[in-house]
Amino acid sequence: MTPQPTVTQDTLAQDTAKPIPSPRNGTDGGLRSVLAALDLLDCFASADELGVSEIARRLGLAKSTVHRLLTTLCARGLAEKNPHTSRYRLGFRLYELGQLAISRFELRQAALPLLEELRERTGCTIHLAIPDGADIVYVERLQTLRGMRLMTNVSRRLPAHCTSSGKAIAAFDPAVAQARRAAGFPQLTSCSIRSAADYDRELEAVRRTGYAVNHDEALVGLSSVAAPVRDHEGRARAAISLVGLSREIESAIERNARLAQAAANKLARTLCL
Image (cartoon, rainbow, N blue to C red; front, side, top):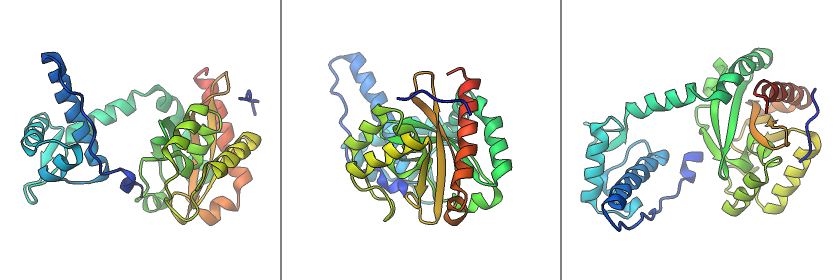
């Protein structure tokens, strides 16, 4: 193994209004509309469908403004109205654009063969995660037939302290660790980390071993092992994790950790990080 240098969930979205800049001229007014439309789309991160009144309340906007924004988004396929409920949901065009963004993501492209091999060797669901503020986002999830059932309720975005990938990244990226401390430590299960002191102890253990473990911290019954993908300065750019039933992951932690570390190191070399 190449040595490295030193260095659910959807309900977490808060139902609060987001401030929108006040326009000073025509250009700012146009920017305000764009920001409002983006904030509106963000509302659907925590709900499958929403009505005009609910969105207006979340954003602190007039219902007439929300209705105009929704009409425009629907016209471009970014949102759509459910004819049976008269509520709104995300449009298929967003899915198309999202798939394009993922398919063109260099890190994911380079990682896919390694992730496929790891899934074949272990029979586990395999994740490739990157940091985003205080959270991590799974940009790839390769599931087994059993994993499809296990992962049904697991979001693509999770707080960094509740996942092995998040801890593996935060241990080797101080900015991610600090962002999580500033955001606090929401409890997804009774096993989730509860305090900054516990978090810091966990990250120190990750730095010591080179891998991170999640024991029922995001979803009871599921555990994982992750290794960071680190650049030449030692900073974690991503993480690769193996996910499965807790009893199966925990019975072979050392083996799973070695496999995750080997894949992460190979990915770092492939990308010349």
